[in-house]
Image (cartoon, rainbow, N blue to C red; front, side, top):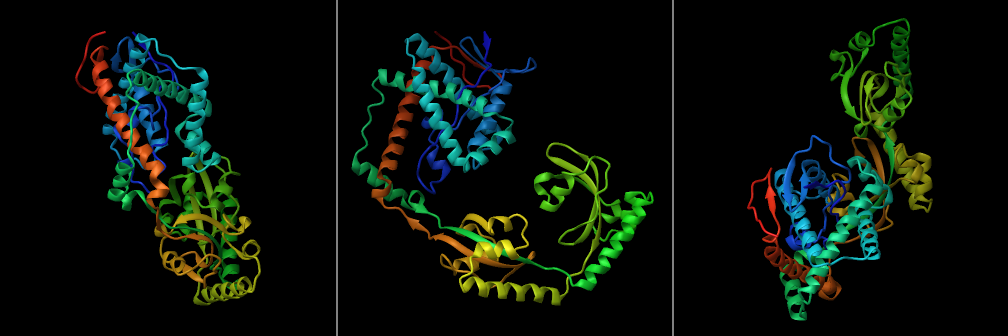
Length: 456
């Protein structure tokens, strides 16, 4: 027997239906053809256990685990439990090998150009689903994959998918007719789920953060200078934090924040830690709460452990009023015709969006959080809101584009519906075909007990 040491199957789009519920799209048949799955891209370690044998091929535990992880990567909305997902993936890996063995017996093969074209299409689909090249690379890095390894996965999957199609062609199983009446009936029965396109809105904002008055700010700076002087004279950071820090959550613990993921840190802290080495203490820097200094205790590729000392600067009602008055004055400029993006670069105190003209991006209208949901619901494209209060300060919101909820007509969806119904019927025929050929190939599961078949 041989263990398998390269990628096996890959991921593809199930349907073009906007807003279609995932569970309705994922018919077992199209999935068996290879949609949404990928197997291990790397040779398994010697310690791998065998989870199944198909003919003279072995499926290893690392391959099964990476295949399941890749389903999660390809379909982040998948809600299947891990154990159920592994069982599903294992069944498809077994079926892949059964089809491959049958193709060898019937001398069925596919050209390299066909595999390349299918692979290119699958990778392009994945990039589109993830939101573009940048998000695609981030998702690969998060799962420990390289694009080269991904391509190898897709090449293997595409070859098996094409082999399955040719085997079915040979049996005359791909000749399927979907009548117009059948397609229209499906639309009428499922219009609310397949035809509804949720509303979307593209937003920009200007943040006017609460900033303390000059007297309070100066007092806080003097107190922080005292803290830094104590540290400079050899004071223990944890002891000084317990005496001086005004962060109630960490002062009693010597300022210890524990381990925190980089992704959960505010931008100003990310910048500070990028310049510190383990054991170093930062100069004081301003934050939304006041002035802060941190000591880097340890860090990994994605987490950091540190202690902090915070000297808070209280925000008064006059500070809030000052932020609101400035927001109202800037809104008048925007309504009078001043470019919103220029105003954002000049006034916004949001370090993430100010340089990009305040652009926040596109959102589902129904997914906006309070208080922005009600504000945006009453606005049209091009409108600029009155000052909106949040925990961060006052915001001016501009609607750059707005698309209301709508329901697509049958004519708009008929091609997608016919393709979906075709794939359903094709999958049913593939499952029936697999039922016939499984008995000709030896199959044994080790981790997940199931029916064995012998033959061939």
